[in-house]
Amino acid sequence: MTEKPSPGGEEQDVHRLHRLESSASGREADRYPAGYKSAGLDISTRPDPGAPFGSVAQAGATGRKTATGPARAVRRKRRGWKSRLLGAVGILGFLVIWELMPILGIVNARFMPPASEAIVDLFRNFGLTLFWVAVWDTLKAWLIGMLIAVSAAAILGFIIGSSPFLKKFTNSTIEFMRPVPSVALIPLAVLLLGIGIESALLLIVYACFWQVLIQVLYGVADVDTVAMNTARSYGLGPIARLRYVVFPTALPYLMTGVRLAAAVALILAITAQLIIGSPGLGAEIAKAQSGGAYVSMYSLVLATGILGVLINLVMRVVERQLLSWHTSVRSEVVN
Image 1 (cartoon, rainbow, N blue to C red):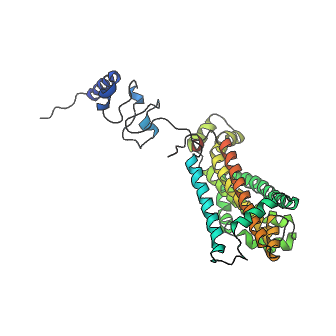
Image 2: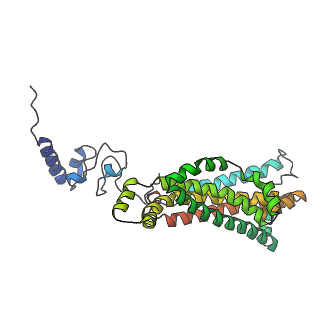
Image 3: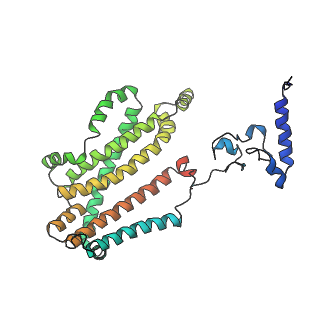
């Protein structure tokens, strides 16, 4: 007959293993099972060998190394030189293909000049006041539209998301209006507001509003019920709960919506200027195209691309600074 283990026998084995591994060193310590190489740990903090790779449960409460994976949370590193090199190679490859297509006769060189000519013209534009005035007009429309859209969407998102009744009441309206393309409002914008910056702002605000609102609604819905009930039990009022519970949870969602809206706002600003004729880079591109100045047209297109990259970089820096406490920024492990 198989002998039944005595009560507490498993606990005694764990204590014995703990004493053995604490006194082991060098090659002797390597003989212990994976997940138990944590000399000096208490039983309550011993890693779980069955936990997912690199998880907190596997690492142990003290964060010491285990035999099956890293135990410490690694602070996110900046992009290494390899990633930057790959990005530079991609851009260089694109420019080389662009340069060769008109030279080899694949496309008409009159309508698509080589990349070198567009780049030279772009650097020439850097010295022109008219170019920087157009850049400022584009950035002004982008900034004002972003401020209006983000402010309105954030406020309404927190109000609607905090009320089950409002969420049900507005759900059908949001789902109906959100898919409407902003460019479909161009005729309405021109009829109501003319061809000034106001028309561009209407398109920018409409497109960016939904990007931020949906993200805020998701963020408010992600609030932990236990944390909310705990806040209520401690006597926190609605404003205090919004500040200390809801807002920290929804902030990462809000910043994601703002970052996405920043790119959409630039696209709509250029589109409005290109089609409606509002002052800015889009209007200058349209003028160059209609006047047959194709080299200038392509150089302005490159300028809009550079502007978009700079805006995206700035938004990422702002996001990292505001979310430096969040695990998505603080504990991301780079492969």
